[in-house]
Image (tube, rainbow, N blue to C red; front, side):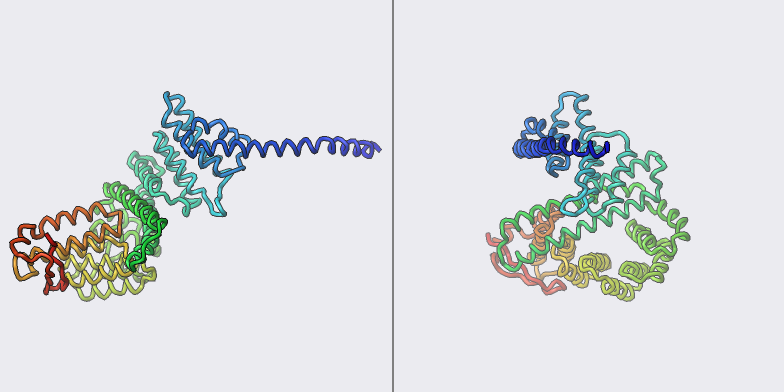
Length: 468
């Protein structure tokens, strides 16, 4: 009876109060929308002081309302950190920024159905670096969490590089969390990640380059994308160089050979480990050691691949079997199914042939690489150097011999045009080659401006004498 008496009473109060709760919820939603609009408009024009209070209201009261709360919040707090007048205030904002990343991951771990954990926590790790956070282990663990839980969105080259640099600092300080073997494995993991980023950018750039070469004008969006891809490509290249400089301090033959010899037995059936070890020995010019032979032969036995065939080519080159080496190099190309990886193999073969003085064959492989990846600027640099090294051997007069440098300069110029990451290097080569080409006085003396010079040596290309 008691229950029956109270139930209508409960329903009576619920009916009376429900509109109030509904109204309160609607008001809250309206407040969130209004405050979001206010802080977003202020943040767009970088008036972060005006944005702060309405932003904090949305952040505290309705954190799941909009992703913009965290995207703009990062900008707001970074600006407050930058412009803090005192160290105490600065520290408060730094800690709040780190807290914001945790809130971001809790409320918006995905964007349009795609995980963002790697991006969020790599940004948090980089914020620790940028603000001189002293706990290196905590920074490393933050990067590690981002990388292990969501490698796909961990794609910003700067935090990728500082992930390795932090690991390197822990190793050199004697922290047991990062042994030499862990450091090398981390280096291999991250360089492979950089290579994947490089290929992704190259694919996008090549679509635009092919359109340009066809004579079709780029849209404003395509032109903007080309510039953006170039900037990103340059960043990938720069940060990869940074970690290469770090690893070079510890990756010497004296360190690598004993380490890989010690660990070979337990990894002899691990094709990835063997491939990385062989690649590292080759990269550091330790391939004269018998261990390199052991690694390569074991790798080819376990898993014949583009890598193992290429290393067998190196072995035969070392033994003086040039023809046999070339067969293995070609097999390496045939075993690789990815055109961008194939282009890199073709380029590496071109370098090997250049070192052996086989200029025509070297150019042939470099041009094959470019047919697969038009944005492979270093292939143009290689071809330009082949031309420049032939200046004294091509041409039937002193003027025509030096004219080879014009051809070298034009080829190097192509490198900078297709690959922003080596544009500065390419421009230096262009200036150097043009500096060795005939001068305006020479052209005036010869009286051959505008004429075409054809090189009948292995080059078999022509160049036009500039007009005065």
